Length: 241
Image 1: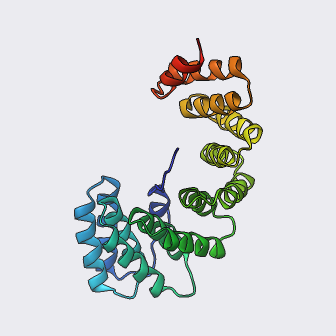
Image 2: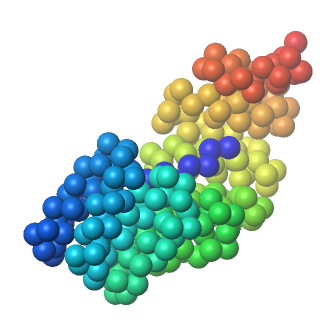
């Protein structure tokens, strides 16, 4: 199962930084550059300096939280994302990102309920935030709310029909719901978007096998193995003689 919580840092680099004093702006720029180079410790130091100069600006809290999360400092990241949210109660793009990242940090700490609440809040801010639907769906799979997960993945692919991971993960949810035909259709969509998705071939093979389509399932298992998915070997040994 693909459970991915990462979001691109490029999006925050492309946003215009405004409202900083000269000194704070320099530290923010320096921190951004260090984050882009994966020097997250250095970035944290620079964003902390920017916060000391201008503690009312939400952006450095968000950026420092991002750096902490990349260092697996989840509790500290949650505190910074919360500060960012508190600094802009009316909502801003950084508020939205903070809910997304705080949800990921809470999931990393095993707080499924808190993660779902944050992704839901992100959706309230922006109904088209595809990552929030997708990641909320992943949490719902973990708590065995497979129908709720499938509904979230459905919303994600409605927003972005090229979102391969959402098709793939909806197939997994449908498998848990014993909807094997629906799973085959979703794995097929994921494969159409990403022809080298070895796990999607394997998953489709499992769904086909559950439908009694052994020959076609073995074709998918062999393709999955060809693409490097080691888990396909056992299925081939057991079912494809």
